Figure 1 (spheres, rainbow, N blue to C red):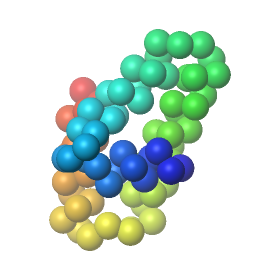
Figure 2: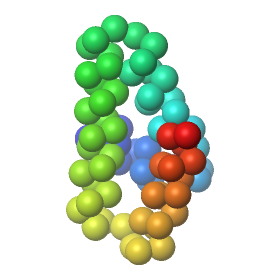
Figure 3: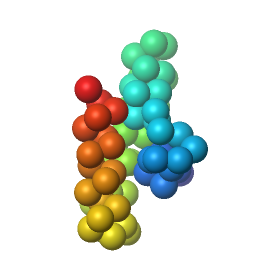
Length: 70
């Protein structure tokens, strides 16, 4: 969950490629790493649904996730 929170808080600053990096990590290694990567992505969703960000931040994060996942 911590990595998910870091990824969300650094969307346009320190780690702009976090979503593709997490997806690549999960898909480039074995089942254990895939499980870890999927859990990080799941926790990003959980954190985002907890409404800890403003509406503007949430909108920016959702756009960033869509762009990073494509």
